[in-house]
Image (tube, rainbow, N blue to C red; front, side, top):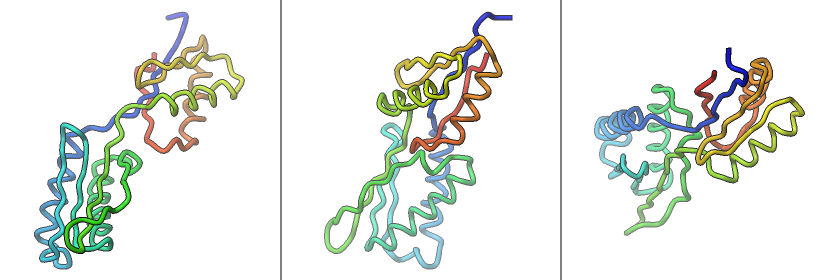
Length: 165
């Protein structure tokens, strides 16, 4: 057995599942009675990971976002993985709202997570490595304790624990 055990804390989203949820939402916009003739549209750039909702009012835009959220939840994607901006007035009386998919852990969040792990006062070492965080320890029980602690916290984005060895 290895002397050191470790796991990685990452924040990733399967873009194929997000694309499938987008396709279902776009289809529902053309079929659902209250949204059919409203002029609401949704676009998704898979390369950039950006949603763009255009609607005649903020209320209709929020309905489209709710439909998308329902489709994402059904596919097992946490709603914290999409950060929505404020509604922007567009041509006429319509509004546009942009949502960005969170991929990876930014440096500030990673440092905050590492500090919280150090404040636990357990024998482990968190290390920031790019857009992920590696936690190493001699004891697997300590790693399990750290994972349980991180699952209870809210860092504004979904966290996954991978490469546990």
